[in-house]
Structures are given as C-alpha cells and as structure tokens.
Amino acid sequence: MYENISIEDAKNLQLELAKQLRFKPVKNISTIAGADISFNKNSTTMYTVIVILSYPEMKVQAYALDTFETAFPYQPGYLGFKEVPALLKVWELISNKPDLVVLDGNGILHPRRMGVASHFGILANQPTIGCAKSILYGENHIPERTKYSYSTIESKGDLLGFALRTKDNCAPVYVSAGHLTTQEQALEVMKKCIGNYRIPEPTRRAHEIVNDFRIGKLKAGYHHIDQPLTLF
Image (tube, rainbow, N blue to C red; front, side, top):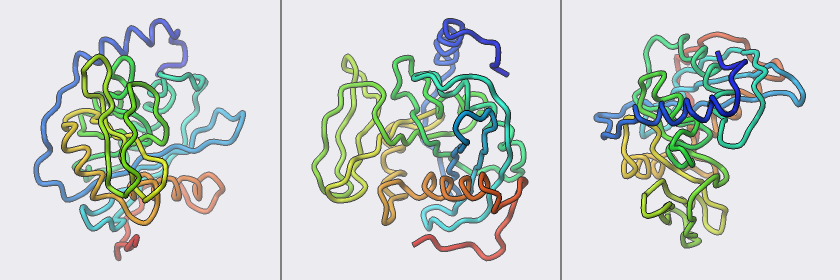
C-alpha cells in the first residue's frame, strides 16, 4: 500500500488526510477495541491484533489476528504508513465492528495532526483514540502524580491531547482524539479503561495477545470468546 512512497510524499499525504478529520462525540459506546502490532527485530513481518472488549466492563469478547509484510521503515512521525495497512487487513476480519478503537500511538497529537490513530480512523471511517506511551509532539504540562490526574498538551494554543496519570507516581500516557470523537470524550473514555496497570486495558490486552500470536501460541483469524474474560 505504501511500500514505494517517499517521506516527502508521505508528509504531503498526511497533510491531505488531515483535512478529512472530523470530531464529534460517539454515542452509546458498548464495545471498545484495542489495536497493537508486534514484530521480530530486522523482520518485515508484522503481527497484528484488534481485540474487542465490553465497555465499560473491560471484558474481552473477541479478537482478530493476522500477519502483514511491509518494507516501510519505522520513521518518527510516519508510523501510520507502516502500521495502518496491517491494521486494515485485520479490521476486515471483524464483522461486528466495535464502537471505538484505541490504538497504541497518537491521534492528532502529531506535528501534522496525523498520528496512527487518525490515519487509521480516516481510512476505516471509524471513531478512534490514540493512547501513546511516550510524547511525540507538543508542550507537555506534567500532571499531578496521583492516578487520574491529567494535564493538557498544546501547540501554539491548540489543544492536541492530554498527559494522563494511570497510576500513582507512574509515568503518564498520552491521549488524543484520532477521528470521529472529541478530545474531551477521548480523555473520559480512557479514564474508564484504566485498570491496575500503567497501560489502559484495551491496548494492554492487545499487547499481550499479539505477543502470544508472534511466538506461535495463537493462530491467525477471528476468535470469539463465548465466556468473556474478566480482566481485573
């Protein structure tokens, strides 16, 4: 999909895609998904998962797994060009789409407002949130050190996202709207996804499942869980 695109062309495409961004609250959220990708060092094979959980109970209902080959390099600010094609392949395996998808990366908390969550959200026409483990861009105001504390992240007066504390005295995660949701809703949803770990449950569970897939414990395809698994 993007194998032969240059960084300059990728930058221009991000600017064009950003014109399609729309922000509105998602109504009646009952399912939420976490998406993540894993790979072996120096390999072109990407292992991808989208796991669907009940919201706000955070019980795993189903997950979809597949692999994808890519030669696009990991380049800061251009994660979508490497990961979105793999995510779209897995997305096609899911017949009953979740109401909202959380991706391990940024939404509009990005120099061109086009992190992986925004990129995927536009191409999938899906409400998305970015929840990153490190800050890529923006002026970061450190939140208080207590769980659920947050501070805004801005650039030139524009609200790009939030630094959210998920545990006392623990490094925050970085939350931003991706597409078809709002900054305020992204923050409130992610607060409700916090469990006992630094990483909120949708992407934490996605990370666990995709690593099991990468080492051969799970098989590709769509897997429905008849008895949902309680995460806490």
